Structures are given as structure tokens and as C-alpha cells.
Image 1 (tube, rainbow, N blue to C red):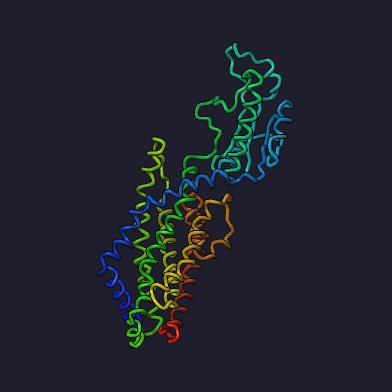
Image 2 (cartoon, helix red, strand yellow):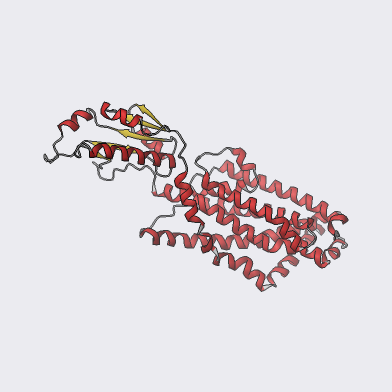
Length: 399
């Protein structure tokens, strides 16, 4: 009971210090949501990076009924295109839609050359149609589709429009196998994790240095250390209170993003894009946000305990902030959709990867539990390390 009361005393002390400072409340909880629009300037950079991904990937183009007249043309287009002549079935199209294959599927009519030679544009009959199936959320697939379409259009121009490309003969027939959910999820998975992780970091950064390094600078940490309190109680109280306060900043930022992003997208193209996220997606996102805050508060608390004052703490935390920013940018450069479970043991990057999975509608619950478990373990290690620092007079009273 004593341990719980002492820990709660530290938590109440930190809450009173934080909520009693109106300026600190504004800068930590309210201001991040107001400044979100500045971060959206990174969207243009992210989109340009997305467009250049996959340029070196070797993409298989499966061709059904390859006509001799076109085979030589397609074979000389690009060294990263591997042509394979085989039938294209509905199972292949479904696999392309689910991103199970990195390919472009082409289907020529049987006897394509004869149909083209006999086609009369004035006869009122539709021209022979070449079907090209691709997935625009796969950058390599989208790139190769553009190459193939351009090559066939140029070939068609020299034949007086004797065949069509991707003419929809049936109502509702589509060739881009990326659904609206996939397109939107692909964009959000590359941009939102960075926004959320930086808002969480800014919330922790605003309060953690003054909580530990600030008390060292003011000399008030000595008063706490001479009280009949276990050092691990002090460490737990500091980290839990800092995490709860930082979580308010993270939730505020997340709500701001969730409310503003749909309006921004709709204003861009004049249509409503559905957000088909389930309750389990939101629960997973909130869990990983809380786990991320715990690790951040723990890491910054350790650095603040090593620092001599608040200014020195800010200097020590700056390289750590750059690492967090780099980790947040990584989803923009990823082309694979399935990730090794080892990635989810890496602190900070695991949280960012889970967020990206949630937004991309590809959440792996095993990966989520690995992330939550590993972050809790890292927090426990940090509490142990902070306890050791509180026990060290050399660290706590260094000038």
C-alpha cells in the first residue's frame, strides 16, 4: 500500500504542476492541433516519393494470346519488365487486387492480328480490345501499366485506330484493381504515422525535461530523494504521469488529423472518399499510441536524468528527435506490403509500422501484440535504469 500511495503522490504532483501552468497546457495539448496544417506541407514531398518508388523493381507482365506483331515491341520496352505468355484468369486478377502478386496482366483477343487486319472503323463494330489489369497502389505495377499503355497507343496510332485498350465491354468492368479503400489507405499509411509520432514526441518533449532536469536545476529533486520513498516509486510515478499528459497531446493531435483529413481530400477532387475503418482498427491505434508514449516518456526521462539542466537536456534530446523523425519517414519509402515480425521488436519503428498497417487495412494482430509487449518491456527497462540513476548521487547532483 505504501508503494502505491507514494507513486500516486508523485503522479498528483506532476499533474498539479502541469495543469497549473496554462501556458504549458496550451503549448502541449492545444497548440499541436492548431499547427497540424504546417505539417501537411510534407504531403507533396511524400507523394513525389511515392511516384518514384518501384522504378527498379522487376515486374512480371503476364500476357494471354500474345500476337507476334506486338511481341517484339513489348520485349524491347524496359529491362525491368519480364514478359510471360500464359492465360490470365479471374484468380490472377483477384491476386493482383489483393497485392499478392507484383505484376501487370494483359489479355489480347484470340487471333488479334487477323482481327486488326479485318477491322473496318466505318462498319459500326467495336474494335478489338486489349485488356490491361494493374494495381495503382503498387508503384511498380502502375509504372509498367503506363509504359505498356503508351507503347500500345503509339502502335495503334500507326494503324489508324484498329484496336482499343481497356474498353469496358461490361457495366462496372474495371482494370485498375486498386479499390478506393486501398488507394486511400496507401496514402494515409505513408503520411499519418509520421504526423502522429511527431505530435506524441512534441507532447513528451514539452514536459519531460522540466520534470526531471528542471527539478535538478532548481534543486527540488534533492527534497524528493531524501524522503522515505523507494526510488522505483519515484521513477514509476514520473514516467506514468508524463505518459498520461503526453497521451493527451497525442489524442488531441490524432483527433485533429482525423477530422481535417477527410475535408481536405474531398476539397481536392470534389468527391467523398469513404473511411472504412472498424472499431478494432481504432482500438489498435489507441493501444499503440499509448505504448509509444510510454517508451518515449521513458527514453526522454532517462536523458533528462543524465542532463545537468533543462538546456542541456534539450541538447541531448535533439539527436533522439532526429531518429524519431527518420523512423516516421520510413513508410514513405517502403514498397513491400508484408513485413518481417522482427521489425516489430524495434522500438519506435515498431509503433510506426503498426500505425501504417492500420491505415493500410493490413493490420497483423500478432505484430500488434509483439509491439505492445516489447514496448512494455522497454518501459520496464527504462524504469529500472531511471531507478539506478535516482540512486546515484553522481548523476543526480552533478553540476
